[in-house]
Length: 356
Ligand code: FNR
Ligand code: 531
Image (cartoon, rainbow, N blue to C red; front, side, top):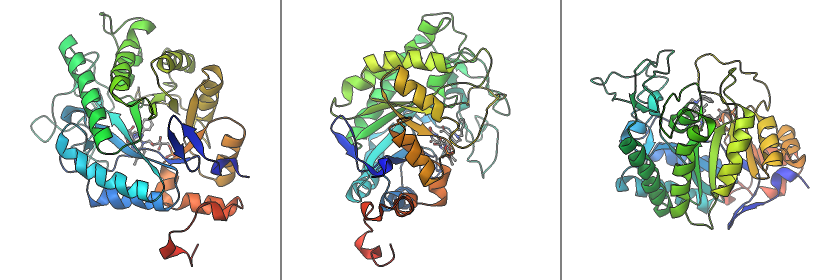
């Protein structure tokens, strides 16, 4: 039996298999609202057999958008467009999930095909926020405002309000984005957090914002539904955030009621010594799973069925998330089932039965 196609239960939610679609910005929302593009883009991956479909980084506040066209859950008007997508995902066997995000100092950039750098405040951009008044660099040169205690409380409440909206929209799995150099990661990493108050300085202070935000979200997110966190397990920079920091944080997150860690890396600095290759981040998922005793998702250049099968079979992660491979092949799970000899596990929609 292929481990990749065994169900996975987390709290009251069961994935039909171990394959998830990694959250991927589509830069296609209108004032934060999803539309037909998202329905077809995400819906086709549920039809393709994914057990979990995670909607892209969804901004908890307008100033937290990476691009003006980011998805959002900062307003009640965002609920129904997301609910429409969730209904289709669920109807086709995938667990609907969303990733809540705030871009911090990396906010206000055009979609990759529309330009680079950061949009000027008077040209579609906006003033940005961060733990410290330090620009990311590398073309993202806007100096953010260092967040005041009031800003910190407001953004934490924005995450809580967005979680409530995600629940109202029918999401059954919630991921908090604390990776890729965005706001929560900016607080975690010593490369970006140079505060001198209780949210900065030592490790215990730098993790406070994330722990408080997660605890506040956990308090409104039903106990029966999975709450997960995506971490950049390492900054790939000497003196930056590293895997040992991630193991320690995971133990604190577990105590706050987090059910799974989604193990990514990078994004905190313009220059990082990333070692990239097939499954290059799987060791992080493996280490966190074993040392912190929590479920993990592995992501990063997972492209082949046998590769994905081995990750789950060998207990290196509980779920594998596909990013770009899923963009190349929405029906990857169905293909993987055929290649692994469990074709019957991913039933074709009746409309396609004669082809699968
Ligand atoms: C991404 N990625 C990403 N990550 C995240 O946490 N939230 C997001 O919204 C996005 N958006 C996004 C858009 C696009 C177009 C790409 C290609 C990637 C990162 C993605 O989820 C994944 O972690 C990486 O792409 C590595 O996995 P793959 O692509 O090697 O399978
Ligand atoms: C690329 C990226 C992956 C891993 C580390 C840093 C950057 N992604 C990140 C995405 C946006 C699109 C580019 C998000 O995490 C929202």
